[in-house]
Image 1 (cartoon, rainbow, N blue to C red):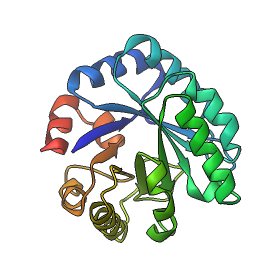
Image 2 (image 1 turned 135 degrees about the vertical axis):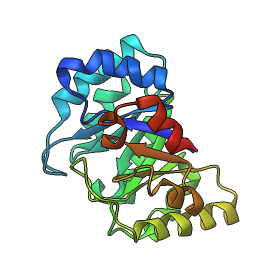
Image 3 (image 1 turned 120 degrees about the horizontal axis):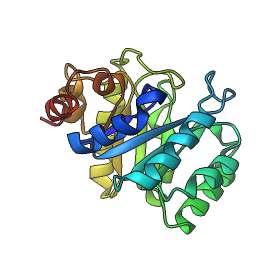
Image 4 (image 1 turned 180 degrees about the vertical axis):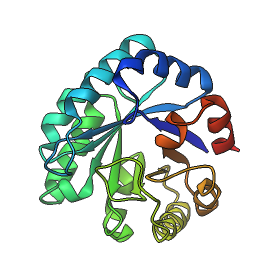
Amino acid sequence: MEISTSILSVPKEKCIQTFYNLETAGTDYFHIDVMDGEFVKNNTVALMTEYAEYLNSITTEPLDVHLMVKDVMAFIKSFIIFEPRVITIHLEAAKNKEELMEWISYIKENNCKVGISVKPNTKVEEVLPYLPFIHQVLIMTVEPGEGGQTLIPETIEKIRELKKYIDENGYGVDIEADGGINVDNIAKLKEAGCDIAVAGTSIVQSSNFAETIRMLKD
């Protein structure tokens, strides 16, 4: 199990030191939650752009960019310059399959991995046709748009169903889960087939980043 630390709740006045502490504590990725205030209610564009700029200059840890936005292509172009490991786009943001495939192709053409995210109420079946073209599926385990929520238990079954399909068809696609993940529930996600867990407040608000990350991984 790899850990992608969401930096959404990192205090701005302590961000540089916090990023350094998270890196030395053993996070595998920095998770960049980009929200535009339209696709979801909160707007984090300015803050996440600033944080991505800082991280791009001070760390070698990969960026894990999650776009919760309406104008997807514009934000792909804004964040691809930071050379992230992966850019994840929401299936629900696309008008049709052609538009979604256009975004996927553009990201891959710019030497970046592609993820597709689905909200809790979106059925797993809707993402299956795109598995041959992407690297990662992000299962939202809460409603996107706000940190500190409680994991929706029913989403764990979606991970299990997706993992079974990926294994049966031999796809090299990772499953990432995001929302309400902590040391008390992460074992259930791992057992269901999750490869990468996004954790934000459970790490950032803990007294010992390294110990919390170790517990999440174990």
